[in-house]
Structures are given as structure tokens and as C-alpha cells.
Image (cartoon, rainbow, N blue to C red; front, side, top):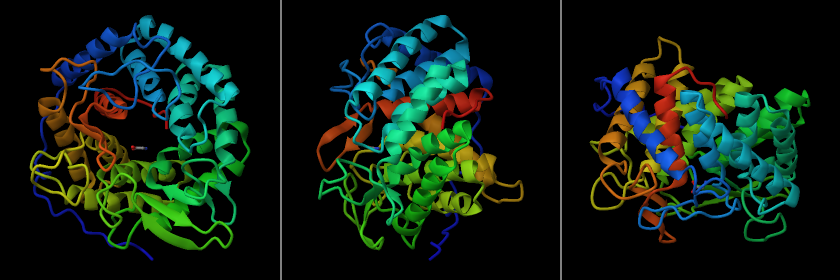
Length: 392
Ligand code: GLY
């Protein structure tokens, strides 16, 4: 069943907010200063998923979030051409190769996040052949999470774990580009087929009739039948977790980019409209879209992901599409709003974007910096400042 399209009801995005080169460069210089301050402490280690009192404490490369730091280093390198970033990139790349060889905490679909931002980027930016080979091996590992009958990649845990068995999640759309990449460079279509099948199942079952999304959805892996949606990080099973919706907007447009299937592009638009209709005045979402005002926390990291997703989405829409410009305006408004009120310019922190939420139901990382928020904020700035080829 096709989900409904609400269109955009918000007047907030009709007028374009100015975004000029000087402003952008100044904001990028702020991000670069933060990265430079961190270069030494995160040479062999990485920032964790979330800060503690706005400070990232170095940890080993073991979590699903370990690649956002190296992703930022590639962006910094592409913007500046400065070898100091390259030096740390090479050390970090070794660590990703080592993690795969030793199979350290890779029972997760987030192999996609991990190896797109480390090794796919290593190949795309530096033409590093070893990075390409590592990315293909990582894609092989991700493929082992595929349930043939249900046609989905299991998100979390060991495949035999009864609590996680047959569970897919909206975030996974961002992990699929690793598989599309593997097909492109090997010429073997098996990776592509699995990625496209998963995206189709997510479109069918994770997206609800009103174009909101479940965070997670269980499939019966014996029969291939859909079971039920359930949240993990959202407010309730029926509410719409803001970051999940942002992963959906960006993730579906990526599946369109890699497959050319217009259904994914249309879906990304419908999800975007749902998201944009539920924003407060400053365009930065609450952590769940069920909240549109009040004292609940915002999730600046979801806004940063959404800004990137909207910029990518608008690139692929025809000039005749009435929302093409609105999506760009909304992305720019989010970037400006993040820059004005959500960065760490005025507070002691080694993070970049504050006021993010990792998981409110678990009371984990609430109103902190989240490392992916920093990455996507930087990606959004780079997208608007220069011509940039995606690592996704
Ligand atoms: N992908 C996990 C999260 O967004 O928290």
C-alpha cells in the first residue's frame, strides 16, 4: 500500500535564508578548529557515541559509531588538502582493517556505517586499493545477516538471538550503500540485489500508511510474513522517532541514487514532508516527532542528518517539483539554526553539536553531543560549500 503524502504545511520554509560563502567558511573554520584540537587525542582511539557533560572520552574502535571521526577527517582533508588529516586517516584506516580481521563487535548491520565512512571513503578520496578490498570484505560480512525468506538484513545481535531475530530497523537504509558499492566495484550483483530487497521491505513494512516510520519491525523469517513494529529509541511503538525518520529520508534517497527506482525517491519525499510538518519554529526537531513544543529535548543530530538528506533529495527532483526549493530552504534553515543555537561555540566541549539525544528511553546521552551529529553537521556544511562526492 502506498503511504499518503501530506505535502508541506509549514510556511517556515517559503523564504530562503541567506547562506553565503564567507558565512560558510567561517562555520567550517569553527569545525576545523574543533577537529584540530582533537587530532592528537583521537589519533589511535576514537570518540565514543556520546559525550559526558559535553566531553568525548577516547575509546577503542569497537562501537557502531567509530567511523564518524574518520569521516570528518576525510571531509576536513577534502576541504583543506592538509596532510595533517591524511596522517590520522591512515592510522584510523589500519584500525578498521584490523577490526574486520579480528571480527571485533561486528554482529550488527552498522558494518555499513563503519566501512562506508572508513574504507569506501578511503577508496573514493584516496584511491586506496587496500581500503577497497576491506570494504568488499565488510560487505561480505554484512551479507551474512540476510534472511532469505524475509528479504531483510537483521539489524542487531547474533542471528540466533530470539529477541533480535528477524528484526529490521529504519537506520539500516544508511548501511545499504556499502552493498551497492561492493556490487559496483566487483561487478557481482548479489550485493545490490540484497540491498534493494531490504530497501523494498523497509518501504513496505517500516513505513506506515501516514508516511511516518516505525523504528524497528519484526519479520517472520520462516514464512517471510510481516509481524509487528516496535520502537527502541522512540517515545512509543506508534510514535515517530525523529532520527529514524531522518535516517529514512536520507536512506531512501540513497537507494534511489544507487538503483534508479523512483519509488524510493517518492518515499523519501513523503517521509520528508511528514518530518517538516512537525517542527518547531527554529526548525530543529524534538527527539520524537510526537512532540512539537514544550520542554522535551531536541535532537540536533537528527536535524543534521535531515539537512543532508534534504539537500540530496532536492538534487534529484525535477525543477517542476514545487517542493524542490522548499527542501533546500528547509535544509539551509536547519544549518543556520544549528550554527546559531546548537553548536559548542560558547561552552567547554570537544564536540561540535550539542543538544542531541542518543536514547531517551534508556536515559543515555540525553542533551549531549552525539558523534554522528557532528559528522552530519560537517557533511551538511561541506555539501553547501563545495562540490562533493558522497561516501554513501
Ligand atoms: N543508528 C542508531 C541511532 O541512530 O541511534
